[in-house]
Length: 204
Image 1 (tube, rainbow, N blue to C red):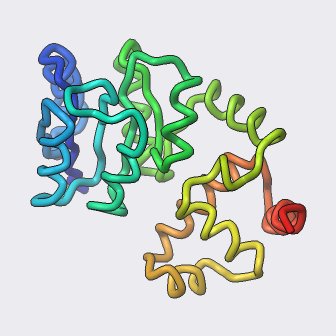
Image 2 (cartoon, rainbow, N blue to C red; image 1 turned 90 degrees about the horizontal axis):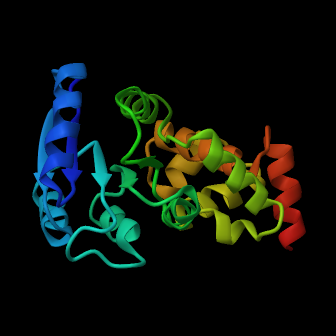
């Protein structure tokens, strides 16, 4: 199935190199480009995208709120933070709702794996990031770990709602709810809704 990807990065070499890999590996995918944050927002307002590879340091970017702002324009768009920063920085953006993180220094195999994984599972977290999120979850309130939408799904799961019920309540597609559920389980390091209920109970 064809996908549409926005490569939002101000570095020409990065855009060209990334595009070359994606075109060779996914010839049916459509690629668009943005060289600054305002342009990325404008692209989202006029076109539907399946995925954004987002450089958080491009001109016009803001320290906090980028992911939330982009998701406000297109809630169902997937966002991979594409950066030279270490995994510690990624946690902030994942908590805001980013669906994955990939270091720009990653090899071609890692980039292809990230694209395949995010379209299959709805998120892409490296083993290092998963470990950091789980360490963070042991010492933090879930409200600080989960994005706003993830926490809404978390609460509804804890109250005994199934995927279809949650989809109706939040006006989402059932597969989207399933993706949120998988991400919540991953971030909180739980395996079932009973554990979700226990965490929810501890908050109250």
